Length: 153
Image (cartoon, rainbow, N blue to C red):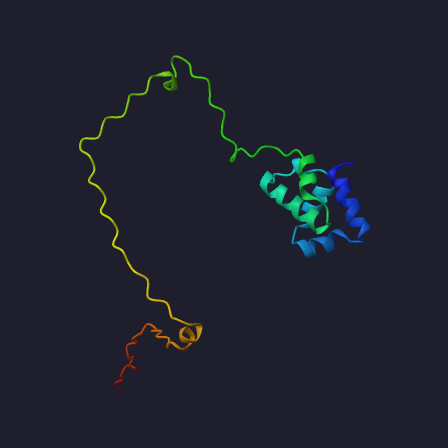
């Protein structure tokens, strides 16, 4: 049985409509219909989103998302998959030897260690910590005084 058929059968066994599932999972109805019709490969949806929607829908229907994901073959996302390197030919720039980087002119100075900052001493008991006064200081904003223009009659 296909993944979409399993999802549809589980949804119908719970007597839920696509609208009910959409309201509770926040997945658009057209995505749920594509999942149930096994047509995710026809949408322009990224495989990452497709896996997420399928997992969410499966968990909502109390199905095993890992088992369903293992049955689905999604297209590869060109943004996430590394491009295959082209074969280098003798005339291509990739076939030319790369010069070794030049040695550094002078050794960089050793970094200076960061100053050690000691944390404040902790209160001895929780009561002391709660009894300690809080000294919050809010920023002071100075608003210039605005005067109404004087009208000369």
